[in-house]
Amino acid sequence: MAVDPALTHPRIAYYSSRYSYPTIGVFSIQSVFENRPHEPTRVVAYEGRRHRLIIGSCNGLLCLHDNERAMLWNPCTGFTSQPLEIGRIFYVCGFGYDHVNDKYKLFLIEEKKSGGSVTRIFTFGPKSTWRTIQDFPYRLRDHNNKAILINTAGHFVSGTGTLNWLLCSCLTSFVEVLSLDLVKETYSQISLPSRDSDDDLSVFPQLATLRGCLAVCYETKKTHWTLWMMKEYGVPQSWTKLAIIPRHPLLLDPPLNCALEPMYMLKNDVLLVNSPNGKFVLCNLNDDSIDFPNIDSSGDGMTKLRPLSRCSGPRIFHIYHESLVSPSHFGLPTCSSEMWLFKPSL
Image 1 (cartoon, rainbow, N blue to C red):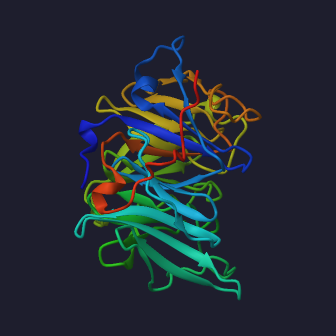
Image 2 (image 1 turned 135 degrees about the vertical axis):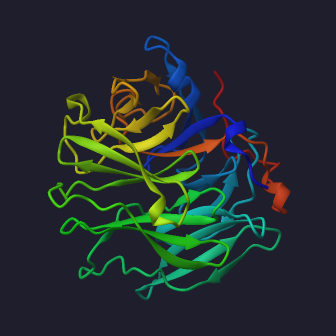
């Protein structure tokens, strides 16, 4: 059951990478774009009994994990699936939708107690089971690798049934996308636009999904960022230069070794990004102007973190579109007797 993103409201859900906060914050992307600076976009907090990380999202469902169990959660309806026991440590993951077989799948590379790792896919359903698949075609802890894996959580591209990770090198101009097809459960690699040889290769690109397409953002010649979009998934020739964004000084203090992170783009070519210094910024691609949205995160329960309007770290963000999709649509028992996440009373 797929959801047309164009017909639903986009929102951002986030959690803290620090394990002391058992809350998930949610705010409206539409509000960020439409509110004037003195009208803050307010974060709604969902409280739980323990810290949960977000592995990924699609069709309005978020896949959550608490180091022991995984479950699906729809923030719009509050429905969750019954937690599924996992109980293993993993360091690469991804959540997505197999549109051919109408199944949601969780991908994990797990550490084995005896050393080494095992690659598994979990298919959500009435009889959910793990299945071991071909090893990840990249040795994460091999120092002889010519590139490193930038994002440990795979980017799901709707309509393609794929999870995508960014590979790049800080020594050479090598950049590629490592892709997992959730339908065939096979891997492939996709070429990215070449970086200039005189670029600062220690500044890592950022992979994203914009308007349903894979996108990548490079820092170029230390003067601007270049944003590319793959118009036809899996076809390197379809990479199209979408924008050139000047390096504004307010986005670089303090400087970090990463490019702009694209988050969401409106039809009028206004782009929401997370800047290298951790600030949310609205970039108008028509006139190169920027604006800093007012996001009120005072109610997110992450009391010792800096306000979201000043700095996003150490928070991890996922975009989802509101929907009425329920885990029960796929034969998963829903959690009707106990609320695993709830909005605190005002």
